[in-house]
Image 1 (cartoon, rainbow, N blue to C red):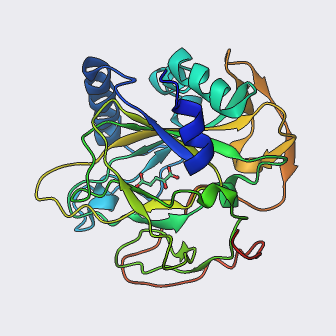
Image 2: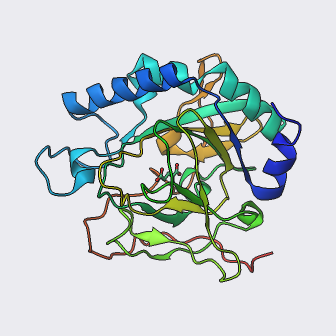
Length: 274
Ligand SMILES: O=C(O)CCC(=O)C(=O)O
C-alpha cells in the first residue's frame, strides 16, 4: 500500500488501488458472472432479463446481493486485500453489506450522479465502496465519474435525472466549479470511495466494449444502523449480524425506462456545501 493511500482518500473521498487483483483473477470473475447472467434471472436483478430487448441494460441488468447465493461473490466480498485497505481507510474494521455487478454493455445508459449513503442510510458515519474494474474503464465506455472532496458534503436533496442517459431517475446538483472527473482504470484496479462522495457514470458510447464492474459495499464496525435492504451485515469472517434498521433507503438506484423522467419522492437533508 503506498504511503499516500490514506491521505489521498482523506483529501478526495476516493483512492484507486492499482492492480489489486491479477488479470487471471479478473478474467475468472468476468467469465463467472457472464455465465450466471446468461443462465437466467436472480433475486436482486435491477430489472427482468429480456435477452432480445433493444435496451442493452435489459439484456444485461445489474445483479445485486449475489453473495447471498453465490460463493464466488461471497469470497470476493470478504477478500483480505480489500479488508486490509478498508481497515486503513476507515480506521476500524469493516462490515460487508452488499455486492453488485454492473455489466454495462456498449450502448448502455449510465447512472446519474448520486451519493451511496442516500440508499444505505448508515448511522453513525457512512458506507464505503470497493469498485473493481473487470474491464479497462475510460470516458468512452462510461467509467466512474467522481467529484473530489464531495465526501464532506451532507446527503443532498435529489432532483430529476435525465433518463435518456441514466437508468435511475434521480440525481444530485453539483456546483459549476466542482465538476465530476473521470476515474480511468485498468482491469484489476479497485476504486475505494466514501458513501457521501458524489459519483456516477455516463453512457457506454464505445462500439464494442463492455464496462463491467464488481462492487462491494461496506460499513464501519461502529455503525449502529443501516437500511433493511442491507441486512444482515457480515463480519469479514463471514458471520452475520443484524444492526438496527434505518428509516427509508433501499437498493442503490431504481430502474427507470429510457426517457421516462419520474421522481422517486425520496428527499433528505439540504445544507449548504462546505
Ligand atoms: O458503475 C457504475 O456505473 C455506477 C456505480 C455506482 O454508482 C455505485 O457503485 O454506487
